Image (tube, rainbow, N blue to C red; front, side, top):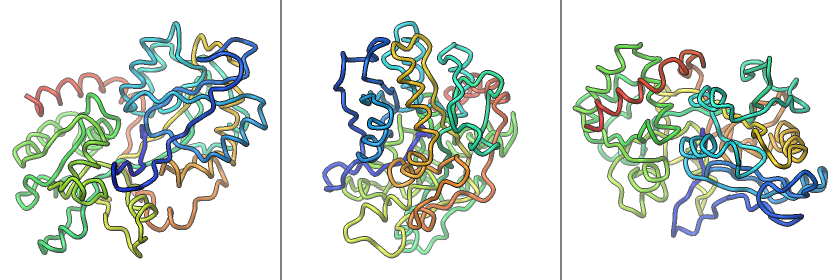
Amino acid sequence: MGITKKVTVLAVGLGLVTLSACGSSGGDGGGAGGEGSKTVTLVSHNSWAVSEDVVAAFEKQSGYKLKVLEDGDAGQAVNKAILTKDNPQGDVFFGVDNTLLSRALDNGLFQSYEAKGSDLILPEYRVDEDKHRVTPVDTGDVCVNYDKAWFQKKKLTPPKTFDDLAKPAYKDLLVVENAATSSPGLGFLLGTAAEYGDKGWEDYWGKLKDNGVKVVDGWEQAYNEEFSGSAGGKKAKADRPLVVSYASSPPAEVIYADPRPDTAPTGVAEGTCFRQVEYAGLLSNARNPEGGKALLDFMAGKTFQEDMPLNMFVYPVREGAQVPEEFAQFGPQAKEPRTMDPAKIAENRDQWVKSWTSLVLK
């Protein structure tokens, strides 16, 4: 996610605290530093977030100061990292997911390193085990979210499946992210390809277009400006009660609300979910590879893994890592998410995005 991807409430002007990580840039030198630098630099998408005490634990344990550079949506961040791989902005990149992984690996973005604790990562999330160029960090499900109050007011049953979204009852209700620029947007496209097959997904998107689907550049705009069910959308007087977001978005709406509601104001159409896995890797040509290795070790560890759910609203991938009760209650993982083999994604992604762009945006 991107993924994320991933999912924090960014409701500007509502008094909600955004949990952006502010890693210290102290130590010797800026940027990625040199071999002797006491600063390790992490490059990520804008949804990176971690508790201050967890950053402090890493810095105390490793002896390195953490500097974080956030660089846009996941797709944008990956593309920029590839363009700057010969002179990288940092030492570790976090936020490439299974929808874009092959692009990063094929372009030589990462060097090999097997993080300590990798043997405790659940087997279903492991990839590239012969070269260990990336470490699985988290997982989450891209799904359509719905505004419960809107559907109750209209006395309309919320959609549950991909098929439902193309029905006349839901005309002009759905907002999605651009599959060419957004990680959840690409995840949703891949979900439709997994559902309808190599050819059938185009017919399906034709139906969505005829049914008034709205496309915006990225998740923040879709969720916080266009979606009527989010805190930001309410302030913006948004009029779309359906949005492509995450299965873990509802707990964010509960946890950051004041007063906190007993139930989430948004729901998830479980028949529309696509599973994403996010990875981190040691950047090729990193100036502080030892610091980068220490950071990857820490991200695979229990302390970091158990901190993620209430900060980045994703699930840990480490065996035995616990999930907070409110996160599990309001944002359970989809029971039967759509998935796709990474090799199939690699083979078809660019052409599918090109076809999608021609079909939906023109």
